[in-house]
Length: 253
Image 1 (cartoon, one colour):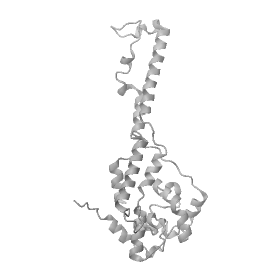
Image 2 (image 1 turned 90 degrees about the horizontal axis):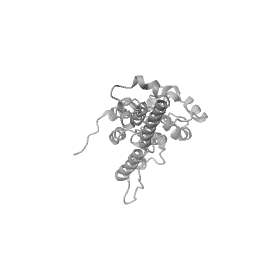
Image 3 (image 1 turned 180 degrees about the horizontal axis):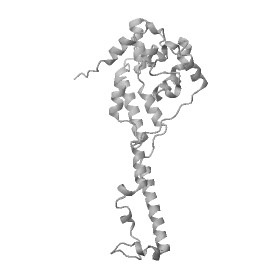
Image 4 (image 1 turned 60 degrees about the horizontal axis):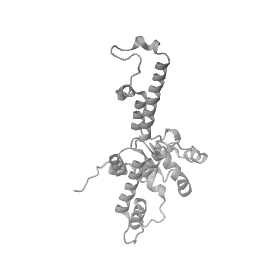
């Protein structure tokens, strides 16, 4: 979880100014890191990513086979390992990411030109009306050039400001449908698990990441464990896991 957030933060948060190309680069880099860390070069374990690697370690140490994916990615308080999936946030942002961020500025410049043309046409249509407003030293018969109109556009152009603000924004996150199955699954959550910070009976109150996690793994949880709780709450070492997870990651020099 820490490493997923650390790498994600240092790769740069999704932003419209960086565009879809940035998200694809981050996606490829995550895949490359997983391949280098976990891929089995001699193909003795068949590991390709962190999911298959953890399954192989658990099988080797405890003899448990056919481990469900939901066990790896489900919250600790519901009986999972709460492995963070960095690809979820990337894919949710990618759907509405800007493919050509430069186009936003191009549109703003075109809008400035259109506004200038509108003012110029209005001036030329009735020059006598505007003569009283002409500053001293300026030609009352000639409309000022476009270069002067946009000289301070970074301070005066509403179109450039709108484009600037949008470029600094994050891509709009794709919404998820609240399906009948998801509603049913959340409503079957036992009372002792309803204090979970991540997965709640109120779908809209959940973080986008956990909404996607529910959509991806709720069916497997229902099929393999009969509900969203993967075990009896009193048997889960939640406090121990939280203590271990609170330890700082130490980099080896």
